[in-house]
Amino acid sequence: MKEKNPWLWIPTLYFAEGIPYFLVNNISVVMFKNMGMPNGMLALYTSLLYLPWVIKPLWSPFVDIIKSKRWWIIAMQILMSAAMLMLPFLLPEGDGASFKDMPMFYATLAAFWVTAFASATHDIAADGFYMHGLSEHKQAEFVGIRSTFYRLSSIFGQGVLVALAGWLETRTSDVHFAWKFTLILSAAIFAAVTIYHTWSLPRPQSDKMSQTRTAGEILKEFARTFVTFFQKKYVGIAMLFMLLYRLPEAFLVKMMNPFLLDSVEAGGLGLSTEAVGIVYGTVGVAALTAGGILGGIAASRWGLKRSLWPMALSLTLPCLSFVFLAAFQPQNVWLISTCVALDQFGYGFGFTAYMLYLIYFSEGEFKTAHYSLCTAFMALSMMLPGLVAGYLQEAVGYTTFFIFVMVCCLVTVAVTSMLKVEPEYGKK
Image 1 (tube, rainbow, N blue to C red):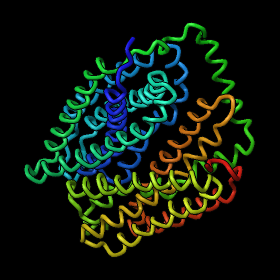
Image 2: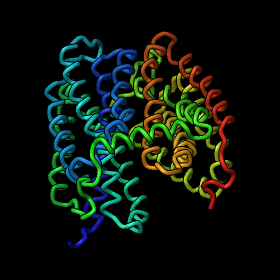
Image 3: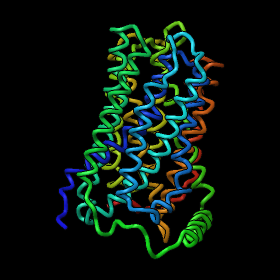
Image 4: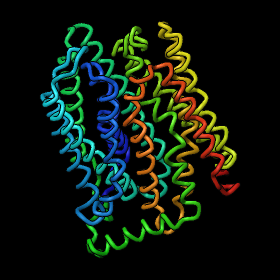
């Protein structure tokens, strides 16, 4: 069988992987905020949407033994297309000042949950299919391409779609219509990509349903991966690092969009939805990407051990920019964009050490399964702080909240100081 050109499917596959993730975890925050949802409730419910990515290792073995990876990709994209097409017609009413339409909100939340579980399953299948569909040489060649198009999906979701919703809201004075139109457009684009993938995705001979292992054998091996993970040396310190290294950013990122959108009287910066799409969804994501690229270059030259402290400080110190923004509430969009870009660049640079440590800790017999468990802890590290971030902000105000974020930076410093890493790991 003739191999399909990877350019026909790698870019669209990883662009499609990012759209539902950012819709569920980021765009939903801005949308519900526009509809008048209070910060405590907003942070709680949108943080719970992280759960499928926390627990996806529980069903990942069955993606290997039931059907093919290609089947799972297409099936989950069809399911997500259906759920995303339902969302615009389930939106609760909200006027930007109050949020009372709870029955429709729960229906909307159910559609988000379906999208979230399908997206988490799609991630498992897409990453496995990447290895089946490409030779080892091609895998290395296209690893940067897949990351680039995933980031482009972030800019499209958090930047273009949010800015479009803001532009429509400004011109129609109808928040509900603005988001309904935006969600219909995004669902239509995703459905078109799904139809395209039914043709463009290759059919590798190695991508077949497992015939050699039963479900019972898979469960037995799965249990063994859990046992061996928790038998690893320094596993307690590793778990603390995975859960707490990003603690300040986990609190900050959940309240970033509400802070940018809230009125000056409420302690926010009073930006329009359109401006937030540009400031955070475009400038911020571009800075995050640049920080990640430079972080990768630095880590390859310094190694993980030497990278830890510069990257931990890079992750924590730029959070001061939000203390400044909350204390002085500047109205200059360029200044706000600079502060957001500084924070996101620092986070992108500092996050490199975190990801490299997850790979380092996963080394061994069950490398793939253990890495999946590490990423579950990674998702949990963002979910748990987010559950209470909104209620905490409502209780103390934005300035004190961001000062608390800076106090959390001490936790990052503490867990970094405890880490045990081989001196030369990750260095060229």
